Amino acid sequence: MINGVRHTGIVVRDIDGAINFWVNLLGFNIVSNHLETGNFIDRLLGLEDVIVQTVKLVARDQTMIELLHFESHPSKETWSGTPYSSGLTHVALLTSQLSTLVARLNAQGFHTINDIEVAPSGKVRVCYLNGFEGILLELVEAIAI
Image 1 (cartoon, rainbow, N blue to C red):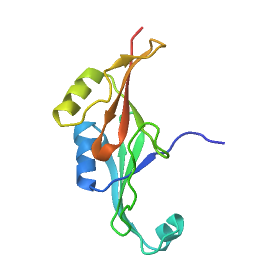
Image 2: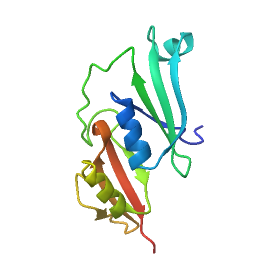
Image 3: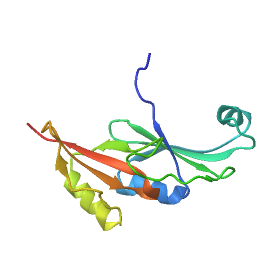
């Protein structure tokens, strides 16, 4: 039985740029930053001679994102970056200041796909944003009732 989600892993090409995006622009905190190698990670991933930098980030509510940068096995496939792509499509993040966050991200060159919308339930305001290296973010703000 599942008790919760531990983290969402995102493989990135530019680890420094990804850290800047998630920490400086979105406000996550780094809780660990390690270079992983050896038998355990090789067996876990089913690869040989793995060298991967893993950076774990947490939000205020302890939601965790794990950034992975493979030094040994660079990605050879291109993710299409659409909401209907196979595999990871987006990460949904809760915010209490959606308009302010979107304005700050826009100023840094990260743009929303749509205008901020109120969901049919009337409980949240939401938009999709093309984030660092094309990862789609769903930004969600609860509406006080």
